[in-house]
Structures are given as C-alpha cells and as structure tokens.
Image (cartoon, rainbow, N blue to C red; front, side):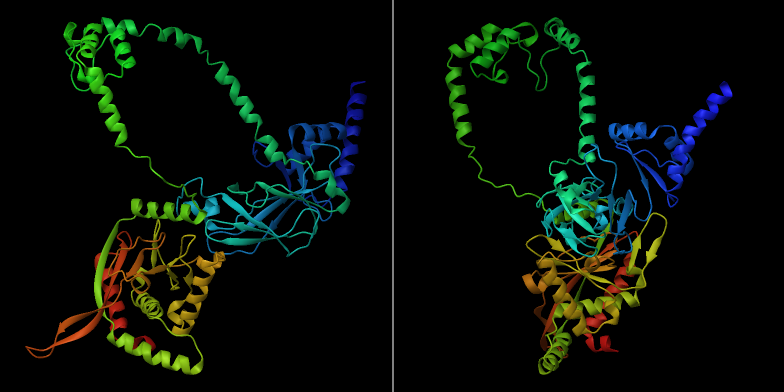
Length: 555
C-alpha cells in the first residue's frame, strides 16, 4: 500500500509537469514578492510549482501577492521594456510587469513602472557622486500625452517625466490599451519602479481597472500596521510611576551655591513666579544655599517687580515685528544643484588661479569674422564662443586638466567636452559641447545658442548635458562681474570663471608714454587631488596664449 500511495502521489504531480512542459519557452523564472526576495533557480521554482495543486497555487498567489513570470513569446507574464543607452554612466529603462491579479475578476495586465531617465535617478551614479538619498530615485509626471482608454503602440509617447535635470519623453514599448493612470499629471517624487499606469491587451478589459490599486501600493500599508503593536507593548505605565518621584531627589540634594545659568528654587516659588510672569534669574534667593523660596517671590512682587516685568515684556514684544515671507518649493534642478555643489565644496580641495588676458587682438579678430558671417548670412560669433574654443585647445595641450578623480585612479579623457553654464528661471543648467577642440567657431556658437534655448525651455535631453570633462562659467559678458571663483562641477577636475573685460592704462614703449588696453580676468578653480598648482598655471598660460594671439586657434 505504501508503494501504491507514492505512485499515486507522483502521478498527480506528473499531471502538472505536462502543463509546465507545454510552456517550453520558460527560460527564466523569477519570484517576485513585496519583500524583494532573491530570485529562485529554475529547479527551485519548478519544485515549488509541483508542491501545490493548481487551485492551491492560485490561492497562494492571490493571498501572498506572489507571481511567477515566464519569459515566453505570447504567454509572457513578465517583460522588461528597455530604452537605448543614453550615456556612459547609466541606461534608461522601464519595467512592465504582468502578474497575477489579487481578484479573479481582473484579466492579465501590465503594471508600468516609473523609468530611470537621468543618471542621478539611478543608484549606479551614487558610486561616482553620493547625492542625497532622497534625490536619486525620484521623478515627476509633467504631462500625460495619452488618456485612459487610448490605444498605445510601440514608439508612441505615453507621458513626459520631469527628472532632476530635464523633461524627458517616456515611450511605450508594447501594443495595448491604457486602462488606468495610477499617477496623475503633476504627481511628484515618484520612486523609480513605482507603478504609474496599467495597460491591457483587450479593449473590453479597460473598465475592469476603474478602481484598481497596484499591489505595490497595497503592500506598503501592512508594515505600518505591524509597526504599531510594539508601541502598545512598550508598557508606558512604569515610566509614569517613576516620574512622580523626581521632585524629592531635587529638594533633598545638597547642591552647592548656584553657579552658571542654573537657578535653584522651591516648586511653590517656581509656580508663583510662573503665574506672575516673573523671571527667576532676576531674584536673589534667601533660602538654604541661595535657594529661591515663596517669600522671595512675594517680596519681589510687593516691591513693584511685577509691573516692571510686565512693561519689559511689552517693550520686548513690540520690538519684534511680524515677518512677511513666502515659501518657494524646491524644484528638482534646485535640489540637485544644491546637493552637487555642497558635495563639491565639502569633499574637493579647491584652489584658485587668476590671470588677466589682453583681449584687444581677440576683439579685432571677432569683428573681422562677424563681417564674414553677416555677409554670408550666418550668426554672429560671441566672445564666449572664442573662450570655449580657447579652453578646449588648452585642454588638448595640457590634458592633465581634462581628468577626473576616482578612489583608485585618475581618469584622463581623450575627448574634450566643454560644459557651458546657463542660468534659467528654473535653475542652473550646464549643457555640453562635445569635441569642442575639433569644431569651428561658428559651429560652437550655433550649438551653444541651441542648448541655451533648450535649457530655458526645460527641454534638454540627457545627451545634451552628459559627458562633460570641463566647465566654463561666464558672468562677465551678460552681468558685468569683474572676477569670481566658481565651484568645481564634479566629477570634473576644473572649471573656468570668466569676468568682464575692462580698459586699463598700460605703460608704453617710452618713459613718458602710455597706452590703453582691454583685459579680461579669468579664474581657474582646480581639484588639487588631480591638478597640481604648476599644472593649473601651465593650463592658464596656454589659455592666455590663445586669447592674446587668437590667430593661433585657427592653425
């Protein structure tokens, strides 16, 4: 009978084997749960599947919120939708999970999670720049371009996601219907991976998700309920009983005469002083060891101290006017800028080198080039375009400044990509001009104008600001700032601060001769871990040479 019972038991399990074998494309099996358990191996998931009858398996999935995903062609229960790699440090991806529903009335569906669209929205970036933890994994829904019930196809834009640096379009990667928008337009600080929408394959299934709540949202509440019982079990009554006895030790302690800011007074005296708004520090105690007693308070009040105290408090209150203010919420770009600059000043050993460069020849060359540009219908070349070009060529001549610090090595870049600081109403942006050393002045000027316009419109894409190796910040031309020191933009090793040009009197050839010349002060901020003082001076010498002899930039 024992052998017959085993054979019968195994025969029941073999019925499930045939069901699983019909899904022969199940190449990878993962085990998802609200507690983020580690993935099971294929054998473990297979044995777990055999351990329950079909009804038991469905019951376990519905009660424990457990889903087993099969990577198949049509019966896919879980799929990963990816976007092309947007930078060297991160890849933009979003996940769509079609799992078992918590109710039998819900058809198969996909839960689309908040994608990672910016390097600071990924944990990988924190290895290079440890930002605040609350900044890394969040995004905002700026605008939904599809509404509930709309059909979606691969390549169509679902919504616009506001990251810490720009507003990025989120594309759909599978065909279906948008059944439910979980995170409405304007939702803020949505964590990466958090469900923002539900899609289904059949249009008639849309209405079944009207009141649907994602499993991730439902799973977030039980821990709070579980956390409450420990507080009730903390047995607060014993501390209350212990608090009734402190006055006795205070009165019985043979304390030394009052010293410092501490004032010794009997409980009755303290109560009387509190009721009459009397400061104990203004009363001299006559009790043991200088303690203030009830009689001291009564004598003070009888001598007119009460009126003096009241008048003093009124005068003090009248001197403090009510402040009128408005609280401005932090934008994402403001949060990231604050975190990066605080990190830079706290961890990077800055030093600063300043030099004055004569720009007379530079301004003359610019006038000639602009004449050619106007004749050919091109855009005018700015002084900032010439500064960016000179900085790029100086980096090619002194590549040590075109580097980045890591804990194990100094990475020296072969590409010269210049970030240009642009101030907008939303905050500070630093779009990048790639390979600036290989581009002409007109090309650099056109790219800077285009990037500045996109920054002001908050439409920069990740490739527009990633990959920079050096930064130029110019406050001289637009604002007339004479000279300033910029903060290094990590993980870069240097940043150039450009001041405004001004005319100065300089000595002439003869003893009684003098001339006028225009000089532009520039300050190089360096990371001393990467760039030594002599190397920074060498770079400034090369930069000054290109500025004062601009024809050499054309060679």
